[in-house]
Length: 478
Ligand code: ADP
Image (tube, rainbow, N blue to C red; front, side, top):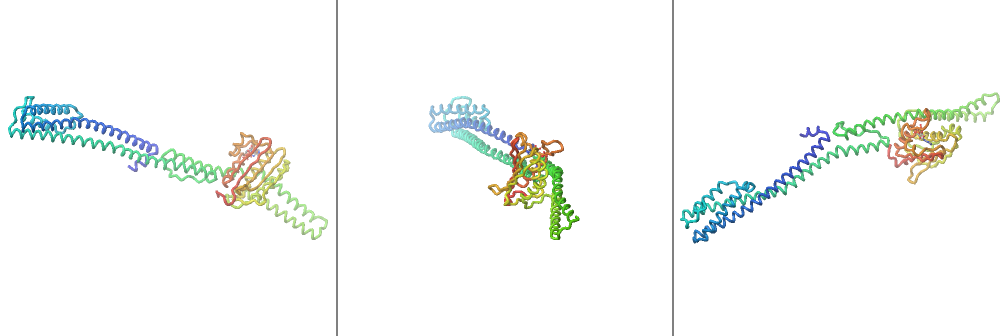
């Protein structure tokens, strides 16, 4: 039975539980109805039998008087009451609801017959004189039998009323208990098979928001639509996980162009300086020894600077796993501003740096944050085609969280477009210029760090992106 139950799906189980509840309710209603019916019939029978019993007792009282004192009145009363008792008995016999309480009709019949014959009133004849001792004995015995039979019948009917009343009282309690039991089983079933998996789904959805793509635990057995939903959800998580990696990778390639041009420009300066210095050193004019040493130091400085730039490029392009570390946000932003400096100058964009120099470090991944800031800065530069002002601010909010904002005085974003800008592959840029991945990747990274990214924009005036990152102590996700 248990095995059979476990093979059924949730829909069948709930149908069985609901039908069982309904069947119990209908059955108990039916039984209650029959019990009330039988109480009704028994009550009606009781009335008749009580009358019969009283009539027989009365008849026996006159019978006693008659045997002791004779007398016409006694005779008349016996005759009257005997006829009345017989009439009552016949009426009950002819009424099926009452007749079914008589288990011993023959005995009733015999008792009436014996009494009637013995007392000499059988067949409606009038009562004779006081019978002799022998006949008196027979009459008394038949009379006693009628009394006993009426008493038995009364007890039988009272017993029936008591049993039916008990049933009518207990039955609703029992069926209510059974229905509550079924309701409880249904509740456990719904809880286990629907509510718990839905709660797990909700948790998993929240975790996805934090970049955690671990699947929901599931036995793989499909019992309901919810199971199908959980399995589909797990497939979606797998897919998202794969997509996320792909998106990060695509965005890296997309931003590599900007990065490379920035790095090339950055490298150009130290290399030019090195070439110029070496040129002077190797030239015909003799350089003083003291000055030579300073120039050599200069060459070393420039070489170290060039090597640092190359290292940054390597760091960025390496497919690293996201290691959480203490990150100096100002330093990351300065790196990005440096890399993008060339493009900024070309487009005649002035830079305002309003950075809090006491900014606390945050827990995050250096390369990922580089990517976020690069996306915002590059977007800002793209939005200011005819030049403008780029303002980069860092500070703490009143709760000690780190706030970073990147503001431009560019073209701005139309109100109806704003809801889409964080969607993957959404871009308003011409083909080949935008991938539509920058903001969606940035959003994912910031979310993963337990932070928030918001945008404020006015068309024709400019755009401000604000990132809120938790301080080291309140990091909620690593
Ligand atoms: P992409 O830059 O490749 O288009 P993003 O996800 O970085 O992809 O940006 C999506 C869109 O958001 C852009 O195409 C642009 O329409 C809008 N956008 C983002 N930043 C700005 C900004 N600073 N000013 C105006 N529009 C912006």
